[in-house]
Amino acid sequence: MNLEKVVFGFFVLLAATLNFGFFIGDMSDPALHNIFELFAALTISLIATVLKFGDRTQLGAIHLATSLVADLQLAAAGLVWVFAEQIVGHGMTAGSTASMVSLSGGALLANLVSVVLLVSETLTFRR
Image (tube, rainbow, N blue to C red; front, side):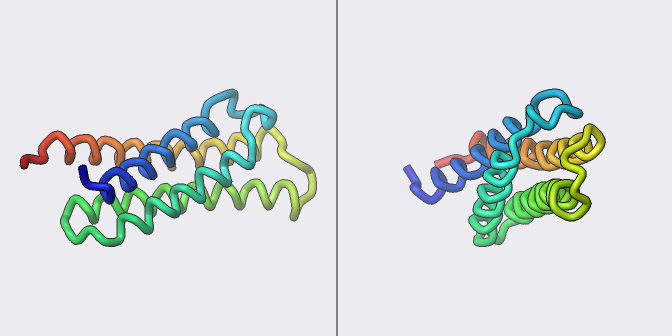
């Protein structure tokens, strides 16, 4: 068993599951979308991105691209929260929550592509 592959797979799957946990629920209800879960999803996604930098294959490039997309989407979702809560000061309205969750949904799609790539790579691996 390759420990590097285990750690890589762990962070890819953890990023996807944390993002899913944040995404699930009514898009307009801020009580169902915990900002700390978004922060955790972004942090783990950034760690997964760093782990993908070492792979020099074409599949590795696609893995990196999906991670960069997820990072960008999650960072934008975090900025929506900062803008609504700290800059404008009106709090999380239904519209700003929907924007934040929609951006998280885009990141979730990128994470799912990354998981599918990981599984397909694992299935085609021969000893």
